[in-house]
Length: 481
Ligand code: NAD
Image 1 (cartoon, rainbow, N blue to C red):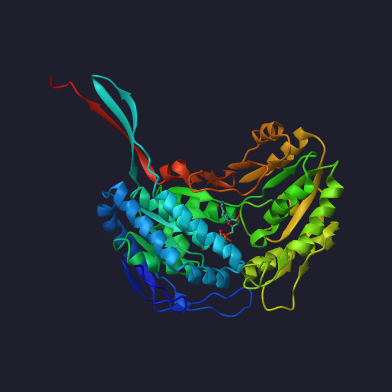
Image 2: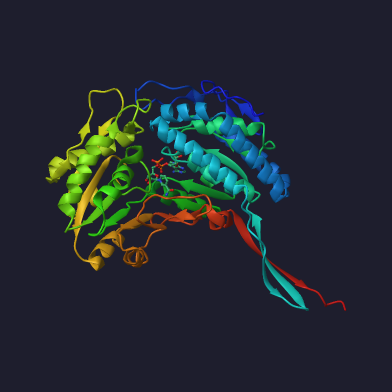
């Protein structure tokens, strides 16, 4: 039986299987109410040094464990999360703002991800095998991994790093975003009674902690998810010690809607995947290209659907899809994009609204009607509930426009003619491309970005490989005959 967690108590960072308090503490706020949440530690550089030292010690034995031993502990960890899932879901809504139904989805996904990772293993490959010699390609763990997690999906994106790092024999130190430290600290607390000390540690801190982690000479790899600008800083810092890194960065996904779709059948998915989590997901439909023959009809249907089905409100209210924007910094960024509507004279199909009077960071969805292709709402990732609809007429042109940006995380093509849609999909430069869907992810399917949306992939066996070095072993059998 795993321990029951108390989501109101934060005794310290999770270092070497113990709570380690810090002299200073801080708190985040509930974005729906503006109320302060609980005090959490602010790690000092010496706390990180201690964690890295313990992770290096733990690596010596953890890297020698078998696949079965690692899998059994990862499954026990998933069970412990499941036993505590209601508390974690509530806490996720309190700290992140996402509706409780979506918090439930996030925890379900995280548990599924861990259980699937527990079944995955990179097989040795035999590259050559004859009487004289055998050549194997094998993989070895890197050592200590630093996991840097953003504030939009702290549980799934955190555990999406922890599972593969541990299954491939590394030890890991997870650093949540200062905006959302709570669930990640609780995951570390649950892990205390499952993994050997030093194998999985969690450090909460302020803005200094990320840079300390990326430059630390005792850390061998950084697995980072966040914005493109920060990703570039992380890469530059890792270069100084030639650390390995995987970067999962921002996106500005196109959804291409062909003229033969049945609008009412695809609308629920397209509209929901434009506004889910208040638009704060890296892979959402952020530029919707609609064939000119159906543009007006599609636009009107999207406005109707959004008005009737995409409710804005606090995460604990029933049927809410758009919760508050997560933090004041993001609120200001999204407000700035809404202000651009008037400044740039964009036409709105759905006006949207910033709720300035409420205590929380609430913004209602806006749909921009065919703005110029070079406008900010098309070329920048808004990370808020605002989306442009754009017209297209030629396949070649719309594919060029979908591929035109420096981002390349995801793109979708919607058509009844699946062969045509697949032919279009194969011309897209993005880490994930969907036909008649968007934002599908799975633990055994690689996920990542082209161009500035990232370097390397997470999840799937390909993602596992990024947590390892390649080692070729040559075995000559007859030298001494
Ligand atoms: P962010 O880049 O501001 O922060 C991400 C993490 O990096 C946080 O933990 C932060 O504390 C840390 N950090 C900040 N500066 C650092 C530095 N100099 N060195 C090391 N760490 C540092 O991103 P965010 O605002 O938390 O997340 C939103 C962004 O993340 C969006 O652009 C979104 O598209 C992207 N994102 C990408 C994916 C993906 O998988 N590709 C998933 C979710 C979010």
